[in-house]
Length: 270
Image (cartoon, rainbow, N blue to C red; front, top):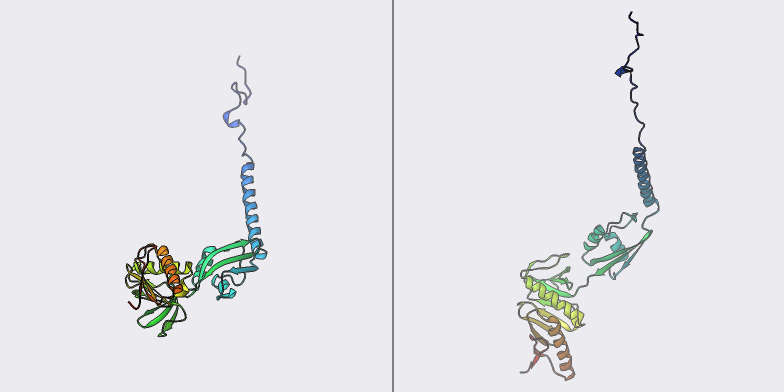
């Protein structure tokens, strides 16, 4: 006789669709930690910006190296007038601004936490006169044109540069020579006469031929230096020989000094 089984009976256990459904997992703590870190960084950055705006401001600026150019001109050229943040100082812009003043050369800057700054500059000085098409210009030892004096004759105790063949000359820019060797010769000569303390005794530098340079002193000695090589030795020789000739009471004359450490003197009356 057959036995009636209950309707929910199964020898193989519950049906598949009766298994419990998986539950979604709770959010991981790792994601929560990243969010917290990002939020913390945002707060720190915001605090830094607020701190810079309210506290870290430049309140004192010192300028070293200026003489004729005033403190105000240097600071204005650097773009540091008004409220400036300590953390947002841009040295490249400061350098570019200072160098736009033809009398200034940027050297470096030093920041002093939390609110001060020192700017170091070099001030250009007029060292020589040069005439181009009847117009006199003043320039420094690097060839930077500082002033246009018009038809005024060269003077003022500065060295007169002759024989310069120029392609372009403009106030606030270096003189552009037709021959690069002329500019090299000028810079080399000026460097040595300044370094050796001889500039105040020189009246003229002739650059007509860069391979045959001439230097003329204020008391009439003309020195032929040859090309622009070994200028330190050549200028040193001329300086020493001229000083000796003066002691001997010799008047002006011609010095052949194209060979380093060798000089031949020819008096003017020969």
